[in-house]
Amino acid sequence: MRIHSSHSRPGPRLRRRSQTLAAAVAIALLATATAACDSTPAATSNSGTDTTLALSILGTPNSFDPAQLIEGQQTYVWDSIFDTLLLQDNKGELHPGAAQSWSYSADGRTLTLKIRQGMKFSSGDPVDANAVKATLDRIRSTPGQSQLSLAAVSSVEAPDASTVVLKLSRPEASLLAALSTAPGVIGDPKTMADKSTALNPVGSGPYTLDTKTTVNGSVYVLNRRDDYWNKKAYPFKTVKIRVITDPTASANALKAGQTNAGTADVSQLSALKAAGFEITHVEATAGAYLVLGDRAGTKLKPLGDLRVRQAINMAFDRQKMVTQVLQGSGKATDQVFNPKGKAYDEALNAKYPYDVAGAKKLLAEAGYPKGFSVTMPSLVFTKSFEPLFTQALGDIGIKVTWEPVPAQQTTSAVASGKYPMFLLVEGLASDAIMTRSFYTETGFRNVFHSTDPKLTKLLDQASKELDPAKAAGIYREINEFGVENAWLSPVFYLGSDWATKKGITYLGDGSSTMSTIRQFGVAGSSKSGG
Image 1 (cartoon, rainbow, N blue to C red):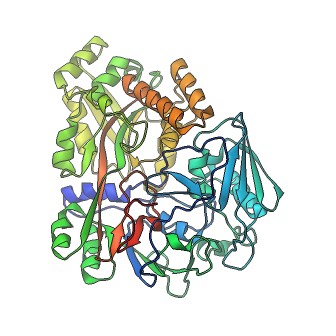
Image 2 (tube, one colour):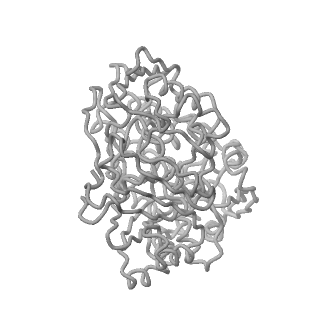
């Protein structure tokens, strides 16, 4: 996710991190083994069909190549241009998208998708199974953010024009969630490998990019397609998305009428309310997590002792951080899962109360009465928080040295295994995706490939369970395992505040953190989010 620096005073700077790091990928429920019904998640009514949504975002889309899409607020642009195989509503539930139905085989290793009939790319060419196969194969073979999400897919077949069959090397519980985000987009086979696609994409989504009025990196103008199959979910005839990285400039754009929706810095809320804007608060869109990655103690021996990891968890006055640093816009937490998700358990937040003396005692019992030293990567999105963590860990005897990492090397630095501990500030996702990232042996955030027999058994159960209610119970057990064994030291969730002008409504509540135009409605639209 692209992060931009901020030049405002410390409070707003920290608030800005929550806005910039709003999550890209979020879905809570998995589909059952039976085919899904052909229903449509209409986020809004058809009223106000000529309304323009003028939205500000913090990140610039890097490319419209389907294999290079980046999630985060950039998703507002590309999700409007491309169809995805599945859709998620504002409660995080899955619905048919370009695939009007789907079904799993009994062993969870074959996923069959039935492609909706009558869809067309903006070029006029039909959307069919071959286009889906071509896009999935391109994403699978091209390094990028989406490639990992399709790692379990061993082959993609298109036996006829309306059927796509994904063969899996193993059951993968997060796959359906992924197919409603960047890994599930459908590109035009004729053009998606062309260099021109990076700035002038051919998609089958609800909008087309107006290349005459779009200025890459500054403003993206989207015109609604009147022939789109799910038009009622998109009441805005035109969408103008401006990239505004400074929170004061974003507020000024709202007041000046250049935009009518956008995230607002906490310092701007009173003025925006006074100007007649509606403010919608979302308690959690991202989280700050200290990943205690070297759980075997191979590079940093102390981390191999559970007592040390527990002591680190006791070093943080989480509620004070939320109150004073985030100015109340956030939530203290001992766990990584979305508080709106099924895996979340409020009782787990009592596991590690703030206790400096208790933490020092545990370190002494583990053989480190004088503490120890650790080097962590200083990343572009952690800089504002680093003094907090330095002080909290220093109070219990752990000396932190921050090693600067260039922004373009952020991903490789975290994944390298060089750093036994590292701080993450990143968006929330579905229970399945968070589990895959933090707890599976090959997970993106499990960089030391930690395993445990009990966890392995739970992960195996979760990957095979297609009943959402039963899967939720397994994810709660995985969450409990992670907290009890102190695999991480989560500290707080970051909230966000959306300001919308009269006539525009923000429909999200944090259940889904995917950035989609379906989060916005016009006056009189349903608050349920479909």
